[in-house]
Length: 399
Image (tube, rainbow, N blue to C red; front, side):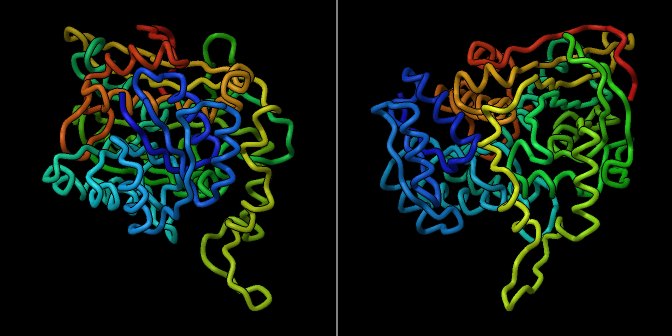
């Protein structure tokens, strides 16, 4: 059994604490820390477990983080704070000598740029100290990487094309809201699209490419839009047979209408503007006035469907396989007081931690999910709430 330090008390952080508390065979002690300790206390009060304690920490402050890690002496730090804080938390883990796990890649505060290179640059520092960093142990990235690795291991001799397709078929009933941190969500959605094709990144306008996809198990047809997502960068690096990689996400017409208006009036800007003698960032102000994603849990109904269609060769013949998960918002809320978007990110973070703490996935350095055997992870994540379905062949369209 091991002690874990969780940094970040948003929706995902709440799920991580709930699910860690369900596994006392692995997590003997849990410390939840955030800049606002009262958020941590509220999550701990929901669970009512004697193994949970809380702390206050500024995740932008390396000495403060290091001091907390040394005080708590965890075997693992799970970072579910903001992606701007990945590097400071990694620095503190190196200083204190503790393994690290996150769910999203680092991005600079002043630039909507989604690249792994900043974290991959830590490879030798972690290796030299005998420490491990596991990057992107959420759903996308995370489970989508594992699904691609499973396709490569069990179903295809050579993976040549992947389409990662993320559908939120849920409804929260609000005029406009985001299911996770609005600042991160809107930065991601409004960024220029890139996809991988024949050894190069091909850039296009944000949400400029639209298709319709008929999702399985009654989720049904929905509009999907091509956008850039970070797992494509690691997948094409570590599975070099991939010639084409695309990421698709569903957005309602209502969401897109509101987003267009907000862009047109400058509310999605991430640079500073001066107002009444104060400098403010419009997108950060917008985040403050939009509904807190945590408040959407009891309101959200419907399901998510996230998966990977992988195409390639098997025994010299062309073959495709679709690997996916469907998750119910209301069932997630009944279990952990969060909707499925937070659930599908938080559960893989816990399972990634289990892989590291049990030694099933553990080697010094900085690693992405697809660089490990997918089977032990899938053996754990299914019983913990995210089973997967594999459909070989089928009539899935070429997108």
